[in-house]
Image (cartoon, rainbow, N blue to C red; front, top):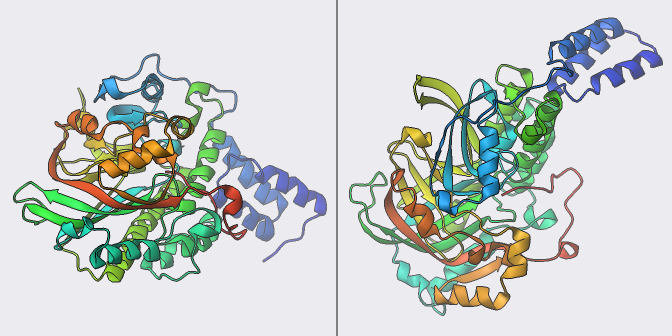
Length: 479
């Protein structure tokens, strides 16, 4: 039953719930009490919530020294990434960590960083493109069809990529809601106002790849491991490989909860500002955890729709498929040196799960090989491996350093055709994948090697040439 209140009381309550330390659910509950119980009861409820948060005057101190952690391929890792990992290992909640050989500078946790913490989740240690992932489908067809660009089979594969994939930002990266998938009907979309609004974006972006380093590509996979978990005999096969994530959905979730974490922990040392965390048993932590997992399901659905659509257009029947994701947090039992095993929250920001017997894909560049791998489950790496080659140039640096002619020669030498793409994703901007794989032979076994041949990426078009996205669609993403 609604209660009466004055305009002054409404203004006062609006100012009170504007505190950015409150979660969306807490604000909603406050307004419900305001409507049903009145100003005094609602204000008391919100003030009790704010009083339960850490005192704004109480500093949150880092450990005096970082917890020891293992580094793979140190010689391939820039100083900035090492510095970021050192800071992460000084967090009060940090318990264990590892750094992969593809590591490079990121926000908060470096790309390639693995961080296990106690009863907390760190949005920026997950990353902006939540649950960005790889998916490979292997077909029993002869991959030699990729060798002749004038053949009918090659033309069929090329048309399938051009007609059944959607890349780009703004309106270019959307469709009119043409794909149905059970993830769009998940009850989680109704959990918060944020997710309710994001469902509109999900409907228009599901089954799309966006921009950045995301791709869908045909290639030749050579399976070398006998008796592998894919149940694919050694040999060469046609394969489709994709890399994309949760698009605007993941971006907005990451942005909202990163801001919430930083607001609630605004007394955290400035050097660790982007590593602000949400306690797992807090309202904000539970909201983020549910939203993150929903973004993971959404990212997986993107890949499955892409692979189904491309295979259908190409007239192919799959032999086997695998997928894995990075930019995520898991509840895992971790072996901590000197302490035995503990249940912790493991963040893999640009790192691939590599538990014993776990399949994954570690891609190279648009022209260099990628690898199907089988995890060895090494405790010191927290059951992890790299997620790719890792950048050695920033996007800006790559555009200034690599020329169009150099990119064309690189692709031609390896027999690769590129549909779209830009200099910021040139192979020269990345570390040598062979060096990165060589630095982690104790983390994974090689099941097979994938060589890209026909690659689709977002067009490198200027912003003024792109169609604008509708106002209720989140036109932003990470990679």
